[in-house]
Image (cartoon, rainbow over all chains, first blue to last red; front, side):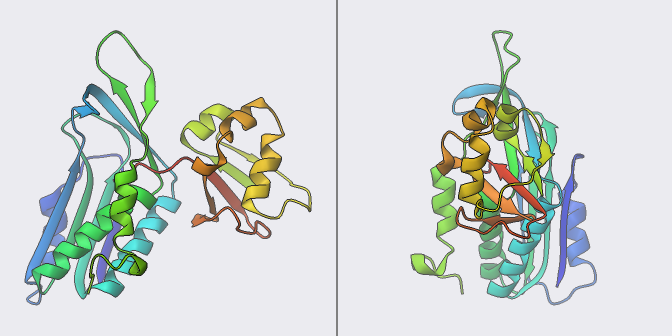
Length: 164
Length: 83
């Protein structure tokens, strides 16, 4: 299965990544495209910018492991994950997940699975700069328990969500 | 072995990486954290709450009871906030 996993500083083009997955295929009946975007607020406080630090090499390897896991769970016909790093401003894209399958249930489920794992296991760390008051401090964003709970849904022992 | 630090773990320790040679008695990630904490205040500060520290050996997540022998690169970092 064609899988793209890429880390980059520059913005990505979701339409172009999707087109690459679909090109020349007649077996794909469903493509799901998810874009994660830098919002203008963090817990209600207005944001100037967000900086993403990452662990090079491990980030690609970890994302690739989850793409392989998604491939084992669903009959996917293509996956692309592009994750940016560096300093981003509100409104900018952070992450792209594209999944392709014959049928929509598999494409939707795999995209959600990949995002839930990206949120909890991909080695990136966000810092934010808040607007106002001349503050130049960057504040580390804390991981959310709700993200851990979402990722836990996919493990067999939870039994709350069928992934077949 | 090489140690790498990320996010506020790196900030508290004051460097992104270093080479270390832990003694034979330090066999697991948890024991390595304890040993590192004794190296100085900055390490103690970084590892003051071991339960929020995550580790990777050779670029794969591991638990705190993982054995460190044979590791080429060990990284310590806070819970991740990617995606």
